[in-house]
Length: 443
Image: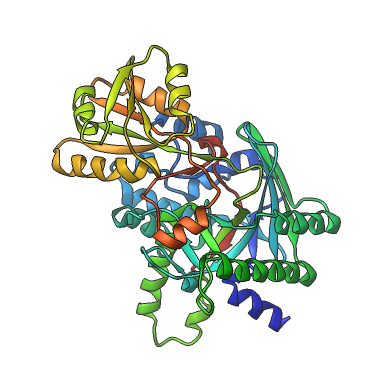
């Protein structure tokens, strides 16, 4: 047992003690989508709040990013911490046996996506560019976005997670194999509908399942060294597919706590050293990669066209219908963008290779920095972009990005470091992870 847990520790994992709502809790109200979704849609979050009401819900444990600019941030975070304490004190959350949770998620777009809830070692994660850590960021991290998330995590009694780590299992054998073991062991420990889909979770509390996980991950680590690493170096085993800023905030809080308690015995086994995440396989058929679109505020369409005209081979033309623009941008080429400003639709073509974010993001960043009164938001989902851009006013322009391929992701990140921030999204907005499982953090 000790050797097995050490083997998993070498692979960056620990077996968590997961907590779930007590029997009888309405899980459809309990489970809430990731805090960084629907950031231009207050009506969505108002509907969630109305639906939840005073019922137990992770809505009371998170800080939806749409409210970050509102007054009363300190009070909101204080209320989050009070809710955590109350859920523990009143027994709303109850512990499972120590173990992993295997889960299957359905969405309006995919019938089944497999995942595994684990705790990952923040000592073996680094989001900075050119890192050689076991766990690496796939996209650039914006340090300025960390403080609000750090405030929520600092001293928090609980964590719930929307972080997804990817493994590079092209044969897609590890998680399906664990799923078979989980289903043979017993019925799901939770099951609920989610926004147009559902999720079920099974506990994996047997050493045989943990050993299968360790064996499978060890094989993937060896493959990583051969495919895109060097002999003897730390393998690139996990890529952050979603929740990069949340995981970076967890890392920052751990480093902060570690520095403040350096002399205390037992420091390196403190729960804050680990973060609860879902591990998924990059090649799971239930995972689609989608671009993350841009919405620029404080600029008219002509100004954005002038900005993009700096790109090589720039041409533009009017398009009549949203569906036509989507089809034109949605091809194989990474050299097409769509602009949406009210009812005006423009197709932009440039001479470029590689990801669209490689040539677009530096240009937009420089424009926002040098142009007072402008700002940018990142929109998950094509439909949400059209809705937001068409209703945001005459000084707002949506930028529709082309598709993103998921094959080769690990090799690309291993060789060049993180991609430009917000380069891709794992699925549409409603497919994002819902907060459901919890874990004790600062006791």
